[in-house]
Image (tube, rainbow, N blue to C red):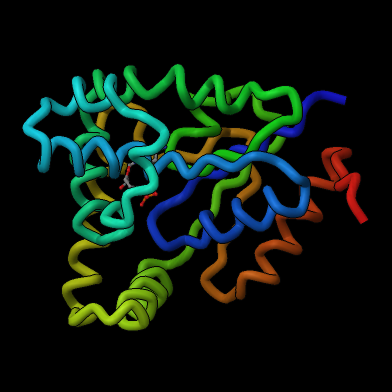
Length: 209
Ligand code: DC
């Protein structure tokens, strides 16, 4: 059997990150949240004075542990540098190497099924309505103690959706063979169960208990 490479794409707050982590745990696979790479490049560009492409080339795995990368500002900064082709080119090798580990891997992002791992045996395109995603992100930010109003979350998410989908370089797009999962009315358990059923249909099963 070929290694199980699971490529997951979708917009912000679609549930793809939670799903990716659960699938990685379930199958005992390494997981890469590729959004963190772009967030780290955006953060380095703003805080170290490096140019974006140079920051991408200099990126170290330890840079991804920076808690500041979890903020919405880092998400916006990541989305901006992600439109620069040289930035994407400088992050390509690291992502491909991660995907080509012997055991397989789970990667989530915007262009995993289309550009990074076009040959992945399992591709998932996770979406949810803008309203559902705004509500999730708003609740998440409130739980973290952020002082934010919903219209601002909506405006920022709509702007990021537009930038990520309309850019020329590797825009957010479903691969033709991706399984579409709309999580608007699903909780994390239901999304996991649906993804698992699709993965089983491709002949992959967990070797664990
Ligand atoms: O998934 P995220 O919100 O952490 O991603 C932050 C930004 O990084 C996102 O708005 C667009 C960019 N990104 C990308 O262009 N390609 C990826 N594979 C992952 C993220």
